[in-house]
Amino acid sequence: MRVARLLLALAWLGVISGCASPVGVDRFDPKKVRRELAASVLTGDTPSALSRQTLDREDLELRWEEDPAEALRELHARLDDPVERADRLFALAELSFQRAQSAKDPAWFRASAIYAYAFLFPSDATLRPRFFDPRTRLAMELYNQALTEGFREGEGDTVVFRGGSFALPFGSLEVDLDDARLSWGGYRVVELTASNQYRVRGLRNRYRRAGIGAALIGRHEKIPGTQDPSSARIAPRQRTPVTAFLRLDDPLGGIQRGAARG
Image 1: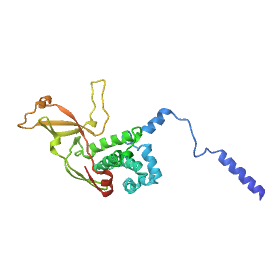
Image 2 (image 1 turned 45 degrees about the vertical axis):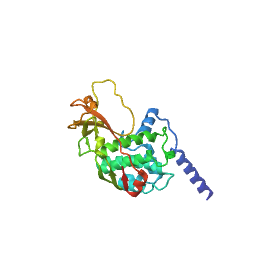
Image 3 (image 1 turned 60 degrees about the horizontal axis):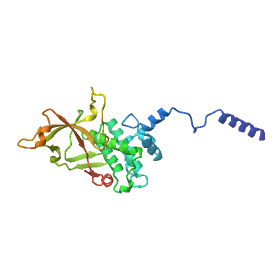
Image 4 (image 1 turned 180 degrees about the horizontal axis):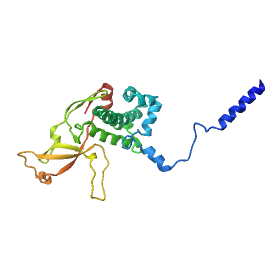
């Protein structure tokens, strides 16, 4: 019996000594590490490491692969916990964006924008994400892009903002829009185009000011009978930059009630 146990122990030592440990540290190219850390659904086909970590902690990684919509519904149902809420809101914003891309459903884009807004602007200002939190800038970009895609008209690049009720995966979004906001300097905005589908050529430098809001290109028509000195600043075929910002009332409450309002 003792000999058998000794042989078994020696055999086990031989097995474990010939195999690499499942957890360890290997040298890796720092550039590749930075690329992995900076990756997101806005730059590639997979969510950021931060969102994947949330899926793993919530035991939803397999569910996300098999049924993304159900995984998002389960994560949405767990927003009552204030301790984990910020992580879950951020993950919901990014994962909803990816779900919208794969399902080609603008309702998920609108949900992404609302989750991102709730993450960036909690009702308690002391809980706002820090400036140095890498999720802050990414959440802004998710909001900007999701807002554009969520109100894009058809397969083209025209974006239509109007008041009314819009479908969400978890309820509805009610938008109040004052048409006067679409007028300036004796001109009315008659068409908005998504700027992310265009690239400037012929210029060496491209300047971009980071901020929050959907970056759009506006086409204008003069309002008959108006006399505004600033109207002379707009040439007949000129296009002007427009930033769209959807301000939400009580975003977290709207998410939990299934009735968001902006």
